[in-house]
Length: 317
Length: 298
Image: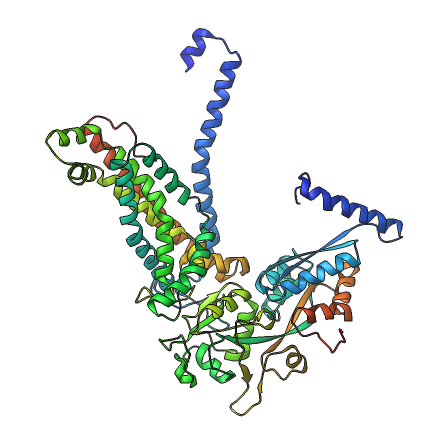
């Protein structure tokens, strides 16, 4: 504050430290913007050549033929890859939404004391398992299990990677959903209880509707997580170009395609550019999802501010 | 450069320094040279073995081996970031052109041969398969989808569907298989499971009764079966072995390459000479590949 500096005019060590820390923190805050912009510029620049020279909108979004190394007729149809990512993420949400919402409701509304703290730690621990370990579980445990239980030819498919991805997305969704429940002011609960509602009625009729936006945001962030996951999906999905018609079909994800092919592609070739276009597409989709989640979270906060007291804990992570 | 201040790095560094000093005292060139060697996943095990053996033999030269696939090695050769590129396929004309454009004239050395084996589950009764049958399975427009079309019934594979296992589309093995089995102008049929390493193919086939896959012979183990392969309907059916790869009777045996940027000189030249010597060739034989010529390794 300039006035303070003028009035006291005492630039001692504490003052300089204060300034230095302010600048450091500002740099930290700005770096996020710089990195995002830098990443976007980089992938756009690498993909731009392909977009202008070779890109065919109808082929990219309409054809499942991804044959970039064909000797006579390379084609760059990403439809099967998009369908693969979408099907795996969709199934993952079917698995993880009930689990994580249930867990969040239990931790946030029913559990107390030590049970609650233990559960919170365990859920966060689940988020710390490396994705390659999840992939390994998919490859060596789920694969033979699915073959045996469902009598299908191969267990590396949408079902396998969807379940794995659902388990991976559940912790982050649980944590955010629980924050959303916590953000509902206690006055809501007290009012409902005063009218004779049971705990479950309070949760179902009052807390969940009030936290709706935060819960939608939690689900959207889970979708974003699923869209961007690479290693586990690469290992568990079968990595096969397919338009899936059942959960037992092998598929190939956008992320896995980039991971598998980029390392062996000559820089600057069409194939290299096409992989970067996949990257741009992924970036835009996850950006849109996160943006939507943010909008929902903000909407939820405004509502509570208008109707009740300002929430004790912010739902904004 | 690697960080040499950390403790684990210090020990080999000191050793290397000592080795260089000894070499200098012995009247050698004095400086220690590091050869960067990168590429083929098929060759990576044997390249590692060569490097280790050579390090014991000539402490003055270190060979740093990295895998990643033939495409990776060739890309590095084009960009001039490796001394020796390993490849399980020949460099394409376009790639040679690119490398020359950057001032690197790639020189090709055949360092051995590999039989590309076809793998099926051990319970699979399939004993032989022809190249035409493989093309009808893997090639675009192919019409084989079920094991009964091959005339076998596979226990444990109730659906009868053939699970095609292939490789990622930049692998040298993938490119060789396309050229040798499908022909120059035919693509793979989409929908195969594209594994990201030679070993992954064998692992998946081992655990999947309906599966069939292709990979280097060196990756064979006791839990998979390798049917013999015939060329044409009445050709001899030849099993994939080191011997049939050497005498050329196995129809899908391929040369394995090392590429250097320009005629190899100095330490790189000595290393290539040693790899091609009887001693080097016996190491590739031990690893399950075929040497260039008949060598006596007993």
